[in-house]
Length: 93
Image (cartoon, rainbow, N blue to C red; front, side, top):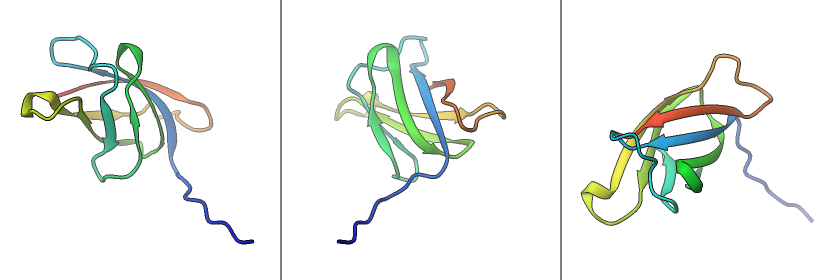
């Protein structure tokens, strides 16, 4: 039996997403890469685990239907990102 798996090539990261006022984005917010690939849900304190990330990019964050309930966060992973999980903060705009 043949099985196909979608692999994610890139870096694994635990990203802490912060609103402009410094508070974390709400628990349960949905997050996806700006290119629509890969996504997850925000946990406690604005943290989200993502895999397959390029070294820099944008994340689309949404926690409701209104325009004030969404933002974009630009991230840049450390240059030594590789086989371990990287940790980074990203501020929503």
